[in-house]
Amino acid sequence: MEESLIGIINVYGYIGIMFLILIENIFPPIPSEVVLLFGGYLTAAAGMNPILVIFSATVGAIFGAVILYYLGYILKREKLRKLFSGKFGKVLHLKPEYIDLSYRWFLRYEKKAVLICRCIPVARSLISIPAGISRMKFSSFLILSLIGTLIWNSILVGLGSIMGEAWEACLPYLKGYSEVVIIGGITLGIIYVMMYKKRKKKKKGSLEYIQNEKEDISKENIYLKERYMDDDIYLKGEDL
Image (cartoon, rainbow, N blue to C red; front, side, top):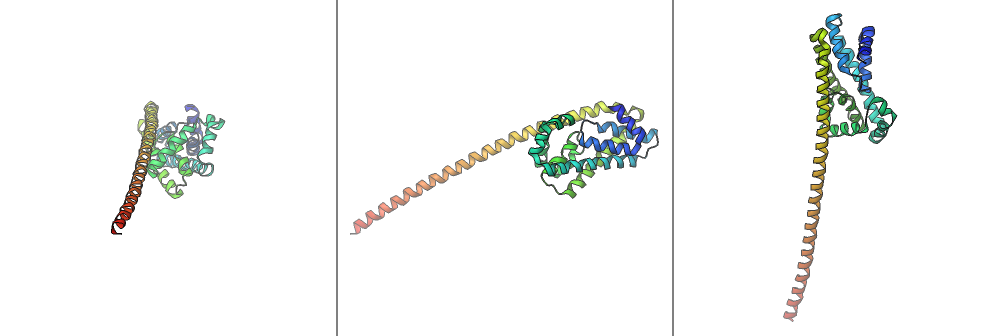
């Protein structure tokens, strides 16, 4: 796959970079790291303009993010889970669990999630979906996606330019970074779900306790009222 990506960039230049990054945002298995690092290398080796490389990659990424945003906006969570469970998910290497994970991240961090996840492999594509599902304000989504994407693209293009012909040496480290971040994200997601269930159970227990207290107080009030009435009747009898 790497050779094919490099071939497209060599032939189509900036347009090729834009197209590949757009596809990468919709089709996560395409490694944007290869595209951006090689693009950075070409700024030093072939005289490509680094600003235009970053610009092309950013435009492609934003177009891809907008497509997924509206996909979430239109189809909703359950329909997307069903879609990812079928052939569509298999072709794109996307699982229904990814929807749940990205959705939990979004609910917990919202705007921060959109910004941070643009620098996290796989998540940078998927975070657009819960943003659409939750009807996040489009202008906020666009600005945060743009900032996060610019940071990620600038770092990798700059790294490719610095490394020169040795740009491929960065790939194993970036792959390791991707795996650590994904595993960490899944772990945090599991911890969040466990804590949420624990809080919910505790809250339910508190509500039951309050309800029991109310019932006890109510019974006590009835008892006191009945006793007061009995005492009142007794006192009236004495007066007679």
